[in-house]
Structure formats: structure tokens, C-alpha cells
Length: 287
Image 1 (cartoon, rainbow, N blue to C red):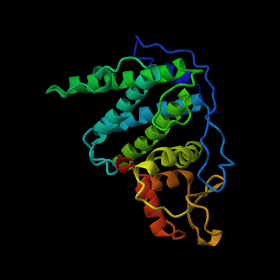
Image 2 (cartoon, rainbow, N blue to C red):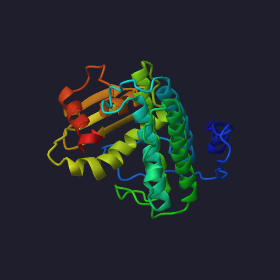
Image 3 (tube, rainbow, N blue to C red):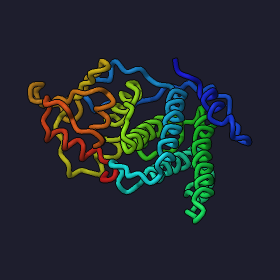
Image 4 (tube, rainbow, N blue to C red):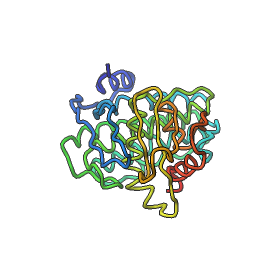
């Protein structure tokens, strides 16, 4: 059973006076764009905004703890950032999304982290406070935007606050895995979150953002088969016969991480070229 966001926030902020939150009552289900795949995500359970936020808060807490345990650890999947920088990126993205949701003047002081000082211990306390404010503002902004249908996003799809709750949940889950991987012990994305991340990737991110920016890339059809949850879907062109379509089998979490370049396939039931083509398309930095 999913916990309420209020309960999670109460626990997280018990020792941080001066912060207040709305009593959560939002339970909107997400809206999906038309699927690129030859089969709909038939077995997927639609997640509510509250469920996205509960998962996001849990992943933020894990990310913070891992980053603080070894701040300068290298992160293999994001070599431009060390562990603490990646956690700062998570908080910064949430602060930015809060600004989009509230349409308040964008103050750089609320987006950029405090400048590094010689007194590292004192600076680290300030950094943690800054990151916490970004997270808190995002959760509050999502609830404040309840009922709106004019929230801006860069895909033009689903202009409700659900878009940002979903997007930030998925991105934070991936970066939580990145940080755990840097520490040497990872936890998979929960199956429901992983399946929804696959749906967002194939239904929203690729057609509305990645593919338009990479018209030079040609991708063959690829069948994704989750072995831990009853999901099978073909992405890409569907003109080919079933026998000509390469299949990639893994857990739902592994499928997401493979497409986003975090893991290598461990089975030989796929065309390596097809997987490489899709991974190139799914690289955010090159999109």
C-alpha cells in the first residue's frame, strides 16, 4: 500500500522547523500521449500524482544519504559530476520545475546552489538546506497547481501538473540509481515506476523531444519484454513482420536502464545494433 505524501513529508521534516506543507489530497491519474508502440501498455497500472511524489521523496532521501557519505565519488554514468554535484542537479531540477509550476519570478538564488567556501562543513550544511528547499518547493507547487491544464512543459503533451510529478519522479529514480551505482550497490526501480518510465520514454520523450532533435538517426523496431511484470511492447516502425523484429528481455527496471545507457544487456536474444541505435536516440545529452 502506498504511503501518503503528507506522512512522508512529516517524517522527513520532523527535525526541520519552519517548513509547512498542504494536506495532500491530489490523486489525479496521469494522461498518456498516443503510444508509439504496436501494442499498448495494457497491463500497466496508472499511477497517481501522490504515488509519484512518494517515490520521488524516497529517492531524494536515498540520493542525499549516498551523496553525503562520499561527496567526491565519481559517478560512471554522469562523469561530468561527482556524487554531491549529481545530488545538487536533482535538487536544482526540482527547484526549476517548481518555478515552472508556479510561474513566479525565477530567482537565481533559488536555482543555483550556494558557492563553495573554505569552511566545507559549514558550506555542506548550507548546501543541504538549499537542496531541501528545492524539493519542498516542488512538492508544494505540484499541489498548488491542482486542477490546472495550462502548465508549461517542453513536449506540449499533458499540460497538467501530473506531467512534472511524473517526469521528476522518473528522473530522480534514475539518478538515485546512478548514485547507488557509484557507491557500489544498486536497488532496481520499483516495477510500477519502471514500466511507467518506459511508457513515458516511448510515448512522450522520444516522439516529442528526442527524435525531433535527432532526425539523422534511423532506429529499427525493437520489442521490449519485461520478465518480472506482464509487459511486452514493440517500439519504432511496425512495418516489419514479427520475425524480423529484435527482442530485448530483462526486468522492467533493467529495460529502462539499458535504454538510458546505464546497463548492458545480459541476454543474447536481441540485435545489438538495434539496441545501440535506440540507446543513441535516448541519450539526453545528445538529444
